[in-house]
Image 1: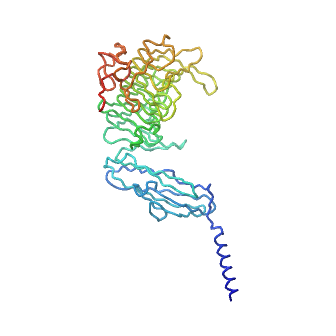
Image 2 (image 1 turned 30 degrees about the horizontal axis):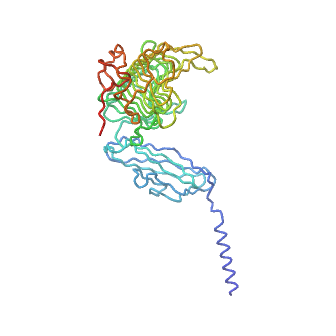
Length: 481
């Protein structure tokens, strides 16, 4: 009997070992990846009272073996505004979720917010994380935390499959609720978009506003109530972060754009002005405007016609201003202050070019009709902030008239008139305060004949009695104690 009992114990151990080592049918490859019906969920309901909205997506196992998801979890945990249900199981973290071969599961996501609570961020962002064999994938969740006008795609191009929002009639955006652009908003040919003073325009990640042939933008801001263009993330971390959205793009033959008292910040390119909209009138007239924190450029103009007064461009990742392919430009009381600090910048703040290479490899010259800077400051953290890329044997015909420029160029050249190269002594570069301090060499160096046509600075100060260089007239700054 003892012999039989020992034999049975041995068989039991052998069988236990057999079952513990057998293949359980789950694919354990660390290279395994899930597929999703969509990579983000947008909760774009316009909420007017406290309520909830539900969206769903599918998670696919496209492989021939079963898979086990170690975890499915809300990144925001118990504090998240979102709730999820995965095939009937609810919670902020679900473990050991199985998907059969070539099958899928449904994930239901609900968000509950109170949009009249103005302390909420404009957008509420979270994500669902999927841990499969140690690899993390995610689906992003975006909901609106405040009531707003949502500009999201309303048309899909049958040829390209691209979806975007079409503004197909003359439209005015007002200052009541903010506007949130999700994706591409395109102003149709011949249509005018007018934006009233005090309006707030927000762009989701990679979103842009584009103007097609013969369309126009009219921004009617004021000193007290400027129009603001920025990203849709308003938390403290994002308030001065560049690259959060795309650009405002005036495409070829769009025309008569006028911007007065605007703040354009935290995008990739502030304004992209593409070729002449008119041979007589400017493509863009821009006044009393700040463009800042652009990951690429503040103003990108290609063969265009731009007139600017009291324009400040600050802290751009490559160039504050690109004037490419010739054009017609007149800048008066301009301040460029480029102290971009997120990454090293090895490019000049102002870049000027008069040619391009066509698709056949031929060089095409594009001359400047006019290139005029007056009573202006071009300065930054680089030793050279003025760069030319001109076709050999050609000239840009530039004129810098009563300006302060950080440059190593010979200031006795004919294009420089009353130009100095000294530190303008801005008040505080770190916090984007580019007012002039008491000892600034820019004080009183403006040409009165130029200033008389622009009697007030960006902040409404009178400059006629003693014009300073730049968009901001000097006034004594009381230091905080």
